[in-house]
Image (cartoon, rainbow, N blue to C red; front, side):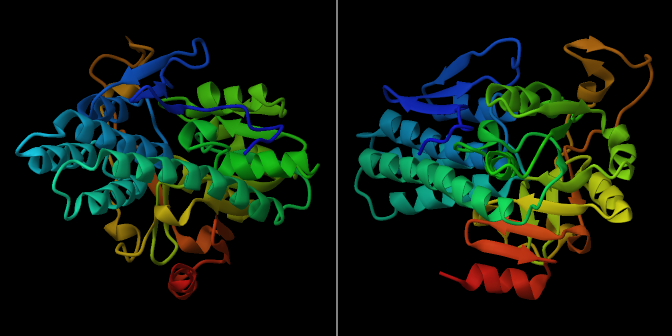
Length: 345
């Protein structure tokens, strides 16, 4: 599926290996890392080579294929593959797409006499393609909510974080193509600078006007009256519509509500966790304090200072104006509306 604003791909399967665009090196270098087994993919997920909830799930699915290839023909192939699946599941705790994708792969293993490599590969490719198609559809649905004006986005919810096109950036790509968005303001997103390194890079590749923004400047920008929407992705959405996303999203939502700016969350239904009743049930990953105390491997904070480094925060459902999924749009989400969405075929 092609589009004039759709040029970035971060995940490629070829020659029985998974190639991941190393997102730690962008925008200075574009290099792919070749993964030939499940442990190397788990390491790539933990080390942020690949990030973004849908992309993590897709990568893990291909990792299960490589595990099956490695252990096919062994007497204990099932135990070996399931051990790799468990290791992949432990790589990062917050993004529910990881567990959703691995559950789909586990189902392919049921009742098999030997490692079903072709079956698993077909399922992984299906997960990959379904995500890209869902992103294009969500792009159309989200763009329909936008009249005009500039937008703010946070972190990277683009093609780099998905199977292609992006969730939040998918909406932005579609809305820009329709002439509804003039400029995108991208939060730099400390401490990994996904907005500065990744979102700005993606938008420049597709010739969409982008201006970088320190998170602390977002409220002042909203006060100017130029911003119509904040558009973000999500790593997990609870059954009541609470949204876990990159740390700093909650602050944006609070500022948006105060300034009368609407707040849109764009994510596939695989991100919705109906087993998590609310934000209280969502595990929040805390990462190494050196990610905050340093930059590019060099310490920038005073010696002796400590850092708190949650990777995500939770935006309460009452601060969300719209959740856009491939199944449809939920306005002012709550438990009843989320249940109705997920009950649909």
